[in-house]
Length: 119
Image (cartoon, rainbow, N blue to C red; front, side):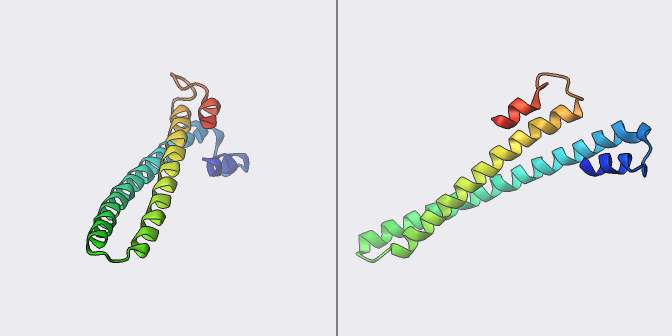
């Protein structure tokens, strides 16, 4: 979006096209954020499957009296990755709200995107 503003200010694009290009840019951003969220959700599902596998491995190791330190470390790393993915999803959702307000020209229920960014 900022690129279009720069091109308009520099005179490479006529100002009469500004509004339409900004909306197109905002819609493209929206699709990008939605795609990013869906990929993060897919990663979370994969992490959950890996966690289940590792927890089962640990339970079997305990039953057999074997060590499971490596699996415990892997579980901790996966939990950290899950947390970072959730943070990324929340950030992308906030960005979706801001972009949605841009698409609607600030009209609608989400009139004040600055407040939503603070969330």
